[in-house]
Image (cartoon, rainbow, N blue to C red; front, top):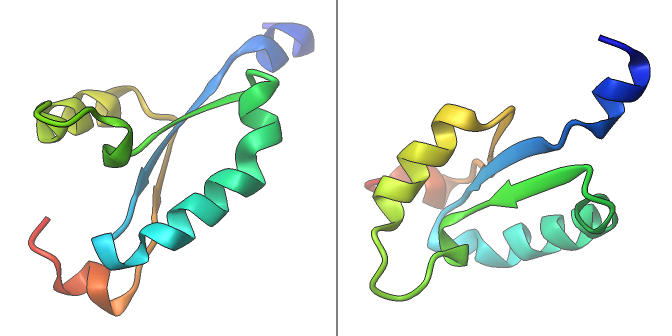
Length: 82
């Protein structure tokens, strides 16, 4: 595969954090926003799922295709049930 073809591939990033750390997730997305706008990365987290949707099912599906899985580890994350 050529270098140009590799650049065209969108990197899928799965993000996960505790509810208490949601502000850090949004700060991270702000830092990634230029890459998202350029179509170089695509991010997914449960807060992108609409109310009433099955976010756990969608999370499992996205985990199977994600290139990067980024966990925002904190004491609250470790203490959470999911």
